[in-house]
Image 1 (cartoon, helix red, strand yellow):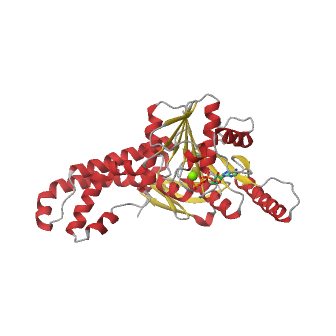
Image 2: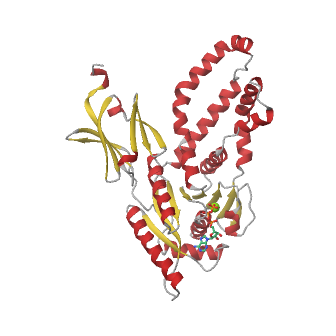
Length: 394
Ligand SMILES: Nc1ncnc2c1ncn2[C@@H]1O[C@H](COP(=O)(O)OP(=O)(O)OP(=O)(O)O)[C@@H](O)[C@H]1O
Ligand SMILES: [Mg+2]
């Protein structure tokens, strides 16, 4: 199975390109599901079909689904929320305010991704095309399972035991309800599911495609997305520059735009040198319906296979060099001044801008001291000392 995720800044054409790619995949005979995690119905609008919360056949081999995140969200969150509400109630928080406090902004998007995983695990589809939310949101949220992993494996089991032991005493003394087993179960279940979402979305069959328009600010965001997605272990294989003005025509306004876009296109070619870079022309009307979308797909992919992986996958690896063992991690377009490292036991915290990834070090270097690091040719290289941390004097 192949999974393609389309992401990018708001309004650049994610839904349109996801729909076009899915139409082309279906036309080539692959059983394809195109799925939107967005509450707006733009995917169905682009395909000119009604939006449905379950996969619905829109054309031969083509199914469309708009995930109803609210419903899924409520199912998974209810137990946890119930507990939080009872705590807030004891604390004297107004019930309406408490209700609002227990809603995590953006959580719906994460839970929509649960549906992506569920569909991926059905084994029914050859191809899954996902129309994601705008860049920053999705990025931040996709890091959640891993960030929670530490808490889940170390803190939660202990907490659960402690709470069990102290429950009778504490409930009586403080009047604060202790979380029951169902709360812990709900947290654990949600975590296991989210963890599996990550496994699916960072797996060898999944690629992320960045959609952008030829404007400097949009390119800047797409570059950041490329860095952050790679940081979190997602494999970006292609970038599509959409809504490029066709050349020709005499009018000055258009000539100026064509020239401005050409400069951004040159920058995009430099930025995404390692990726399959595609362009899609600004069409004279909104591409709506299967025929239009297939036509758009033809201009984007020409006669290449839209499912082909557009870039080599570069895994995280430990290399043995003259200077010692080096952990190399792809980190394209990262500025060295933006990268921060911190050590936390056998984990390494890699920060880029406002994003942080908690990386479990491979066993070969887990006990070694970090001797140096640099960002070189799109890679973060962390050098380790020969001595283990245990051998060192404090
Ligand atoms: N190549 C194109 N030529 C002309 N119009 C286009 C092109 N690509 C997209 N559009 C139009 O631009 C608008 C935005 O496209 P689309 O809905 O696909 O963007 P999006 O990135 O999914 O937006 P959102 O962030 O709101 O989900 C739509 O009206 C769409 O029909
Ligand atoms: Mg959209």
